Length: 382
Image (cartoon, rainbow, N blue to C red; front, side, top):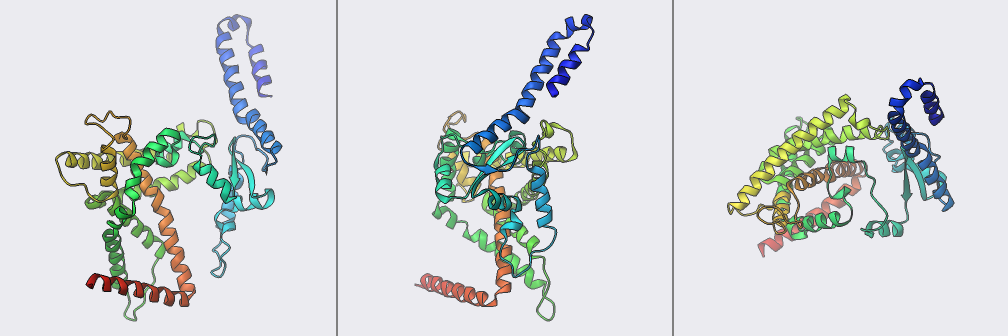
């Protein structure tokens, strides 16, 4: 129908104008054909190929795929609070995925716009996929949106993934992580002191633990990532948190061709955040590199360890292909925040909910903690 309409439009143009309009008309037809193929014919061919291999899944819907259904099920699931006695959280956290697996099997497919997503729940297959660094299983790529939030290790493929992984690995060695324990302890002590000061005369108070633990996570990441510059880190945390929320709002519309180029309020704000985040990180990294060149010892935070590891593979002019560019380092710093931001705070909040529901678990956890602490104190004295 689309091509027919285009042909009809061209046929209705006066012949005197067709002499000059032929090139433009062919370009219009060619672009329309490419768009139609990308948004309709190619997804339909992929759907037939997946079903021919024995996979089951949802039927492709033009342009948006399952995005609308995904959002609708999320809104329904999150409309009311989860009963405290219920631990069946999968239908609430990922209702669309839960329904798709239940209806179409543990290996099934769905549609993110015109792009098919295959869901795999078999641990052996997942392991094969994750270990196949140079195979044909590519990560989902949404360049326009990825560059706005973090274009680091989690989105790289092949040789670039291997290089970044090698440079980042030293920052996560056990001995390096142990050096960060004082920062973890300081953040926790400050939070506990704050809670104690909030107690009423009867020794109780009401707190929004979710927001408190989000702030704790931000402090921990900021201190362990940037050391003494953690105040700038806290600003980064706030910006990245807002960017993540806006990312979720944009992800449901990214399937629309060219959406990220539209001057919407959300798109403009995401670009503003990207510029501010990049500016802060570039300043922090520049100061740290200059200090290292002047002979100052490397700090034991993530940024210091990352730069030290990277400088081993980069010459004085920064030209070595073995190292990362400043832009690469900036993107990896963004990943630090996103990787530990919501994950840790959500886990801690849910842990506190469960401990409050099961007082006997509190007693067992406290006994274990005191036993371990006593052992550590004894070892220290010895």
